[in-house]
Image (tube, rainbow, N blue to C red; front, side):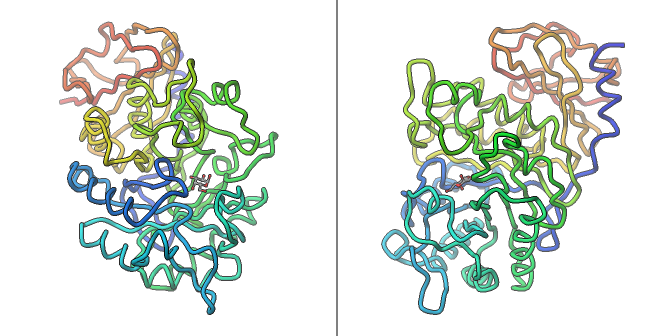
Length: 424
Ligand code: GLA
């Protein structure tokens, strides 16, 4: 029996159904898509940069391709709460205030996302790149009401506390979930249990290993993804004292072991397509390019789609190359990402090439041939062995060309080919 058929049999029983998320706050029929300020602007985010990003989402066609949530990440807030304990926007960088920002986004057919932590400080406050101590500890209900009053549609809720048990984090996330629900406004809750997780015995697995059903709509499964192929590169090239950095290859590899749960979407972190390492504080070196090469950028979008992951762009949309725009707005890849079916998974290997499979809701199959290796690889897939009858058509989702799956297919080094297989 070919290795990938055996693997298919084993995997068949492992995946739980997951075609929608329902935390009790919002019923999502597909993983959210949008843009987040962190990777391009960090603590330099301002009202003007968010306006420009929103305008670019509209003019680039990204909004109409599905990217609707605009998430203002860390550092949007005043470093002190007001006299009554409320959060407010930083008056210097968000002079019109957060309700006006929400209106700006809503007026353009976009949704408003914001960032907070259940701990006493946000991650930037813990790391020292931003002052104050304005996490939600002691203010959960008040903050939920404030967000609802501003028209917030999405909250990224980032642990940023000392490593803690899953139960403790679930309770903290759950009380915000309840507070959001009690506002009566549907607000997507996206949690990150991994921030500041530094225990080498359990690196990057807190989100991945827990069952967060009922606590949130989206759950981060690992550390921050950087525009790097492999976290081994980060470990070798950069001094990385505070927390682990993830790359594309290791994030895909880790995702194989993360079970799907009905009720929430696994979130392997934001897209880093078109973002720069230097903006994130890591200078490029002779051996590490500042941006992901095109092949690796394609791997991120395609594999995130195979995983049914949220698609949150993080690049500066006002300086996006045509190539980045074309990739991010690829309708065929987005359709696979947004499909109501359960996430795909790896079903086998042919040499260096991994075979990934996703059974789509309408009966089509998405097949990704992913080559994490450093040399190009040519494969022949035994289509009948994975239940694809003779006579089905495989169309390259990024190329638009039909291709017999059992013909020779060459996959570039650190690259991927994605097919939509239609029978009958
Ligand atoms: C953590 C999160 C990032 C980002 C920063 C903000 O590192 O994982 O996605 O939100 O905090 O400080």
